Image (cartoon, rainbow, N blue to C red; front, side, top):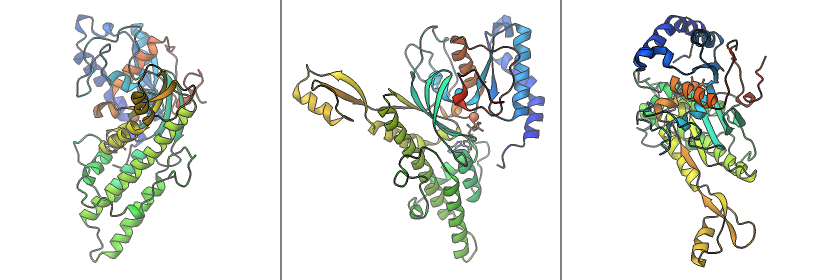
Length: 391
Ligand code: ATP
Ligand code: FE
């Protein structure tokens, strides 16, 4: 619950990587050819802990060079963003098992999986809170990032503050335990007047950034006040459940407000956004998913179509659904809602499938790397596609 110790992680990577690779090859059903059947070697290049990245990258480079296979260095957050293109069922593309494991035949060459570009991506994980436009493989624009804690950290710290038992053996860590704990809240609105919705639209309409430190401090303040007011000096479970639910509500509302603003901004800039992809560990959160569904289905996004053959009744019905009406009378902007796409929970948290998939997407666009690439521990996603990496 206290985070990762870089040195221990480094040693664990060195100790475990060879047996993990061996096991993966054995269980992949590669037949007689064994590892020679593999077409490309994809590996995480950054961002992340330098020593751990180094162990993985060296192993991959050695494998690729020894087998004479193409090497693809993957940006970890691009992989989170592109996972949805692997997991979305589409008649033309490979189906995916409900548990998230890939199955079926490989992607037909030349076809483009869904969601198509450009799409909006909300990456909510242990280290990041990012709202991006994905223009294409290798090209992203960051619309908002956090100025302090990531949302995953905020969930983890709040779970610790509220003494929520970490349901060991359950995937998702403290954040998932908080979500579970909050479900038992009898009065989820109890603390809402004392918990802020960070950078709320009311106070700062145009501020496209995230912040969770203030919300987390408000939780601490309430815990201390409740403890001071209680004869036992403790805060009882039902109040902790209400506080967990209140925290989750405010954190999710904060994300929703920024996504809503981004949808409007993109529309005004003429970007034809079809979907919102939510990924990263916090993307497992059911409240977050359903609130985003609500927003996106309410949001009307326009394609202009000619309606001169339509009856006036049809036109009226369309107009009711319009975001705005532009152009000559016979042409109206027809609304359609933005689709929310979340990979299955298992593929929202870190996994190797997303790295392999991103390797394939990059390979299909000729984005192959030389064998002497280095790790990139700090690597803004916007830098992809420029060919440059930070010093
Ligand atoms: P990054 O991708 O930024 O390097 P990471 O890979 O360590 O970070 P993930 O594994 O994607 O992060 O996500 C872990 C985070 O997700 C943790 O903070 C965890 O508490 C949080 N989390 C997982 N499940 C849930 C859930 N159901 N609700 C809220 N938070 C959750
Ligand atoms: Fe991750």
